Length: 374
Ligand SMILES: Nc1ncnc2c1ncn2[C@@H]1O[C@H](COP(=O)(O)OP(=O)(O)O)[C@@H](O)[C@H]1O
Ligand SMILES: [Mg+2]
Image (tube, rainbow, N blue to C red; front, side, top):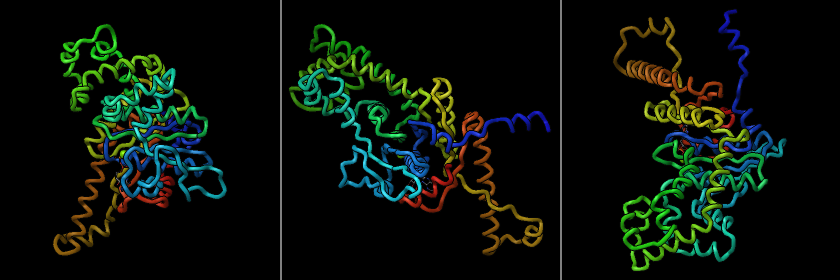
């Protein structure tokens, strides 16, 4: 046996199942449209089926997936509720789901960090807060990890799985806690909360990103409300910073696993590679790589087939042959595209999921996907 082969044999076989068994927090992240939300739900199903009490925080489930998880409009979805019919009777695992509501999460955070109800209300009742709490740059990402923290410390769950918001850059999620700290240290924020506030200072600052959001509000009260808002926020600043640090630590903890999801499309692969680099660089724990939406490799033609089909290039059989060639070359190109990405996953398990010809929108569909994942 060659040394290489021996090395391979000795390498521990990491599986996604081991990750689901041992982690307390899992975050699915990756480029847009590759199946992050679907994977988060399927991981939840897999975890419940091996006996864990699991909650999945979804962000933007496709309509029918939301229905399957019981997250339809009629249900107050910010609080977890149980998804029925996924667990085998032989285990006592449970699957619960909720839909991230960034504003409610932010409200909860403000209430928790405020010294008094009055202090909390000063922030929460401010029209500026109400206008920007859901639209602050990066707020969705921060609130996703904040909700993860809230659910984790509640002690109610064996495993919390968080889907990530569709953002311009998948990496935004990793940086969310640092961004909150950055926001609190931003010169504009400091101008508004420290020392004498003058109209001039505020208009100077108007180009900043968050005041841009504020500016869209009409009304003469705006400047006063804005100043008042930042003043009231200053009361809980210490708390916010502390929490951001806790969240940042939690994301790097041994109980956490990031599962990167990608498709084989060149653009997605590029972004996923960038994300894997960042995860390694910033020392976040990588739990696995899921490559979704892969075209299955067609059965190769045998020599006999080739001989039989030689010279046929028209008619239905010719079309079939052409299709077979195209699919083979697409499947090959995809596998080529994935070589570097898989290498970047290092020791973490890599799971490939085929492009299915049906949408995954119900519990049996998720169970099928869960079985492929673990
Ligand atoms: N392996 C697959 N085969 C076929 N369709 C899939 C597969 N994985 C996901 N989908 C579909 O692709 C769409 C996008 O998936 P979604 O999980 O919402 O992606 P993301 O959260 O990354 O934007 C959904 O309609 C989903 O049902
Ligand atoms: Mg999604």
